[in-house]
Amino acid sequence: MLLSPRYTGPTVVTIEGDPHDVATPLIRQRARLAEIATTFTDDEWSAPSRCAAWSVRDVIAHVAGINPLYVMSAVAGLAGQPTRLMPHFDPAVSPLRMVEDIGSLSSAQVLDLLISSNAELIATAEALDDLGWSTVAESPLGEVPIRLLMSHALWDSWVHERDILIPLGIEPTVVADEVVASLRYVAALTQGFAFGAGMECRGRFGIEATDPDFHCVMAVEDAVTVRIEHPDESMPVLRGPAVDLTEALSTRLPLPGAAPPEWHRVLGGLKHTWDLGNDPTPRLVSR
Image 1 (cartoon, one colour):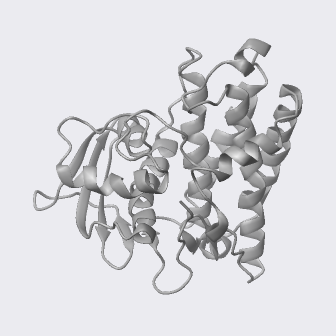
Image 2 (image 1 turned 45 degrees about the vertical axis):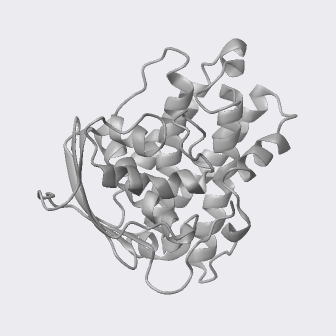
């Protein structure tokens, strides 16, 4: 289904925190992914990933191919002329077409594209000051601060790194700030997308995560607000290891068995956007 981003009214997602707090984890993760990709053999490039019907090469091509959109959006936002591309984007179809468009490239060319597009994304992030990180730009959710646009870029690449490495039998690197930034973002994304589908779950929802320790409360009203505070027993609380919760909210793993039913409904908006229905099979994440 086509996205229904929000361009007017209250900002669809707000996440409490420093304006620039995603810079370091974003830059580190992108540099690590490129370094790992330089070590792949021909067999590893062709190996299947966790993304349905995609090889390692396809996933890398997706990450590299989407990078210019982040840069374009940030540059346009900083110029005071945010883009309006997302209403034409279908998360279930558009990424597949993007990968097909660069299907003729060799693995070496895909690697070069990843390295060069990562460098442009990193340079864009490094040039931002606090005002820049707070400037509005277009994301899949609509108009949000560039901090959240870059949060999407981090979360997307963090999950795809795992999509590649886990099937190859390589233990993914886990860094606390990358996990926290990805977890809080994807939790908000579930309901940010739900607004466009008319499937929002209004109320307050908590997360209590471990390894690394993280807690927050997500309030869903006319928009989504994530605050860094301890949830209480008056709300449904999702508990578990932070990596597992991020994977589950990214549709890579089932939600924990003890997850409150409200959290299953929260995840419904994301599954609807990606046309997953009730299929628990891990699928392509960021699209």
